[in-house]
Structures are given as C-alpha cells and as structure tokens.
Amino acid sequence: MTFHTPPLARSTVDRAAHLRSDTTWLAAARADPRSRVILVRDGSVATSGAGGGAVDPWAEPVDEVRLAVLDPVAAGLGADDGCLFLGLDAGELPWFARRLPPAVDTPLTGVASDRLVHLPVPAAAEVDGLRWTSLRSIGAVLDAHDAGLAAAAVALDHWHTRHPRCPRCGAATQVTAGGWTRVCVQDSSEHYPRTDPAVIMTVTDRAGRLLLGRAVAWPERRFSTLAGFVEAGESLEGAVRREVAEETGVLVGDVTYAGSQPWPFPNSLMVGFHARALSTELTPDGSELAEARWFSHDELAAQVAGGAVVPPGRTSIARALLEDWFDGPLPVPGR
Ligand SMILES: [Zn+2]
Image (cartoon, rainbow, N blue to C red):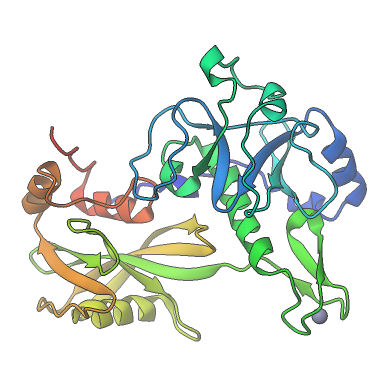
C-alpha cells in the first residue's frame, strides 16, 4: 500500500524558528507592508472566493477556496498577543496570522477586504467576499502553502485561547517568540504549544477486508477508520491495539506506520497505521462505537457509490488511509 499524504501534512512553509526570538527582526517584519497576514478565529480561517463559507466539518470541500491575504495594516497586525509569526515563503516574505477573539463576531466586510493584497480583483458581488471557513471542511482544497499556514495558525490559536495562565502557579503569562511561547510573569517558566497524539488505523483481516466503525455521535451511514488518543505512558502500537480491542473486540497483531498529519481541532497529531487483525468477531462497545462492520473492496465501492456508506471527509487522514487500502479514490456517490 502506498500512503498518500493527507492534506494538512503537505506544508511547504519554512517555519524559520530561528527568527522567532529576534525581536528586532520581528518588529520590522510586522511593520513591513510586504509581509502577508492571514486571519484566524476559533478553528476557522478567513477565505476569499465563492467557495468559502463551509463551517460544517462533514461538508465536502468545494473548489477554489484560498486563504484571504491581507497586508499588516489591513489586518490590524500589532505587537500584541494576537500576532503569530508563521514563517517565510519561498520568496523569503514573512507570513503572520492575526488572531481574532472567538467571542466577537466580526463580519469581514468593508475596510479590511478593500485593502486586500494579492487577491484577484473581486467581482462586484464579492467585494465583501471574505468569509470565515472551517479549516476542517476546506483542508483538502487548499494548496500545500495555504494548508501549512492554516494548520499552524489554527493550532496556535486554540492553544493561546485555552492556556492563558501558568499551569504551575496560575499567574498570567505573556506571549513571546512570535506566538510560540508563553512565559509566566511570576516564576518565568516557559510554556509551549501542546500537541496530543492520537492513533488512527486501518484494520484488515486475513481475507483483506477492512474494519470500519460508526461512532455513537455520528449520523447514520457515516463510517470511518477507528481512532483514539494515546494514553499517558503508552506506545503508539499499544494504543492501536488497545483502541481496536476496546471499541470492537478485535485483536490486532502487526502494526505498521503509514504517515501522520496535524489535526488542530483542537490540538492533535493524527498518527496513521495499518494493522492486521488476529480475530474477526465484532462486539462494538456501544459507548464510543455504535456499529462496526467488515467491508470487502467491492462491498465498500458499491455502498459508497450507492450512498449507503458515507466515508470520512477528504481533509482527514482517515480518508487517506482508507484510499490506501482501497488502492485509489473512492467512488463518488450517484455516479
Ligand atoms: Zn507561574
């Protein structure tokens, strides 16, 4: 099986970490009109073009979505906590993200969109064409550059929102290093963005059938690969075997690494595996999984084409793993 790199793992951005602590350079870059700024808020990014606006994480991504790109003045980029340094592009231009507070519902119209840089001139109907769009729904249609920027911006934004205080003493913390560190004002301890690993896996039996499950919280007909968080003190392989056994009762033997992708919803790293089942009897736990089923290649093709099974969205690593096993793109329903 060949692993096809999932959308959010394709970043081409140079993170230029050596520049994060260079306060003189950062200040100059924040003020440089050539610098580029994207906007992030609560898991969503500002996008331009007709295709944006999807906030349903299950929605199939639409074509022609691009990140909205502003200059520092239009984006209101200051030296405050809302400024995140994301790195340099291929032309060495600095890229930033401007965080906007989740509580404030700021319509992106008027002044900011009038001052866009390197966007095509919008048609009259799209002058107010910036939208907040869930990264989860559009990750698959962003190019590698935009996907890398957006994944970092959304992950950092979540971290700042959820970690305003020092975990050691409870005092306030200050943002440093271009948004990549918070320092306690009381005890000077440094705190870094968290990334929580989760495992996600195809499980196949001796006949080559694939195990998919439907989570309790999901709508009818939606099936995906099994997944779960890695527990404290646990190996990745151990987590794969434990999750599959807990959720379906299936015992797993060999576990092979396939690939990974950031999943900043809010702060996971999805680590993908292909696992071989040693047993086939299914006893879904009922608390996490409502249903578990084995699918042959032909069964899955027919059921996806007929709409009886709705596969995971194209942004997810689950889709990449599933299409690995399928050995190509899944059929499009109704065709
Ligand atoms: Zn502290």
